Length: 332
Ligand SMILES: Cc1cc2nc3c(=O)[nH]c(=O)nc-3n(C[C@H](O)[C@H](O)[C@H](O)COP(=O)(O)O)c2cc1C
Image (cartoon, rainbow, N blue to C red):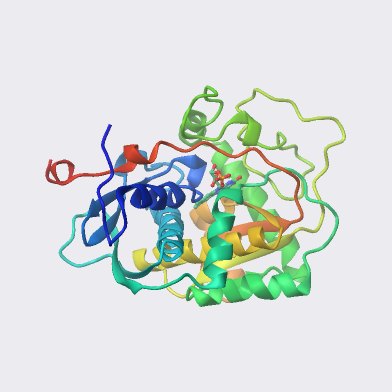
C-alpha cells in the first residue's frame, strides 16, 4: 500500500485526511472517478478514466461534476487545516487526466463558514427516502441560492408552474434509459454489491424501489433485491432546484461540481437532506428541453430534491491510499 507524503506544509497524516474528506464527495453511481497526485508544493486532482460511465455519461460531464465536488471538499479540508488553497482548473501543459491543481496561498485560520461546511462533509449523504412534510424555509432557500452564487453558478428554484413539465421530462428520460439494455447493464455493475464493496450504491442506501405512481422518478438502485414497504409514499412538493452554469465546457462542469457540493453541504449544515434526479440531464433530448424551460441561456448541470429527511446509510468509500497516483502511472 502506498504511503502519503507531506505536502503544502502539512504532515503526511494531514494530507491523508484531506484526501479522505475529498473522496466523501458524491459521484454518479458512487463510481468515485478521481485520483490525487501529491507533490511537496502541489496537489493534483485527476480524473480516473477506468471509472467513467460510458453509457450514462458518454461526454464525462458528470465525471467532471463529481470531481468538482471532490475539489470543493479538498479546498475545505485544506482551509480547515490552515492552508489557503489556490486552485487552477484544467492547467495548460498538464497530463490529459489533470482536472485541477491546488497550491498553498498562505497559512491562516479557517473562517467559521469553512469550519461548518467542513464538518458537514461526513454528514452529507444521498437521501433517497421520502422527506417529511415541513417545507424548506425561505431563509434556507436563500442560503442555498447564495452558496451556488459564491461558486460562480446559479440555482434555479423550480416554480410551481414548471413542475408539471419537468416531471414529464424526468419520466420520459427514465423510460428512455431503462429501455436501453446497455444503460441497464452498466447500472447493474454498480448496484447490489457485496456488503464489503468500497464503491457502488449498496442496497441499504438505495431507497424505496420506484413505482409508476411516484411523482418524481428516482433511479432504481435496488437491483431487483428489495420490494417496497407497503404504504411508502414520497412527498408531493419537495424543493426542486436546478444548478446551472452559463456555458457547458469542461471548466463549467468542474465549477458546477464545486457549487453542487457547496449547496449540498450548506443544506446538510442547515439540517436538510437532498438527493439527485439526473436522468433528465443525461438524456440529450430531455436535457435540451430543460434548457429551453430555463430560457435557453444557461446550462443545467444538476437537479436536486431537497427537504427534511431521516437518518440514512452512508455509501462506502475506498481507502485514501488507493487514490494516490504517481508519476510512473502517468507516463505509462
Ligand atoms: C453527477 C452526479 C449524478 C448523480 N445522479 C444521481 C441520480 O440520478 N440519482 C441518485 O439517487 N443519486 C445520484 N447521484 C448521487 C450518487 O449516487 C451518490 O453521490 C453516490 O452513490 C455516493 O453516495 P453519497 O451521496 O451518499 O455519498 C449523483 C451524483 C453525481 C455526482
